[in-house]
Amino acid sequence: MAHFAQVSNGIVQNVIVLGNDVCGEPDVQYPETEPRGQAFIASLGLTGTWLQTSYNNNFRGQYAGIGYLYDATLDIFKPPTTEDDNG
Image (cartoon, rainbow, N blue to C red; front, top):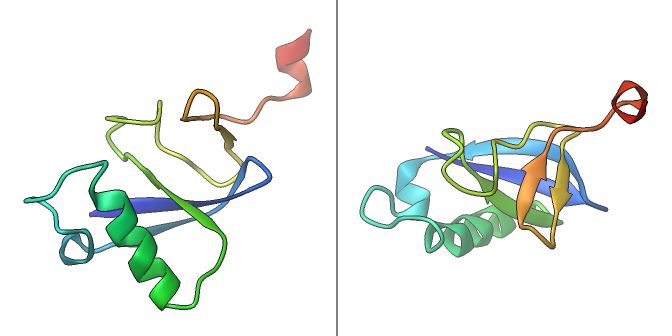
């Protein structure tokens, strides 16, 4: 299975799962699976920025959950911060 996170303004809005056949897995691996998944998502009429996320934390830091942050500079997903984290 391939997991994709919809990112808007650096925040994960949604996460969906695509079948292996859509991305070419297991014969094709990340990062080559990402554009295949993005094309499929677009064909469904889903708009926005969709980035592949790893359920097993194999890439992009960790699995993206709704509300997680995407750091484009580091190309990683991070858990949201809380006010308790700052003090």
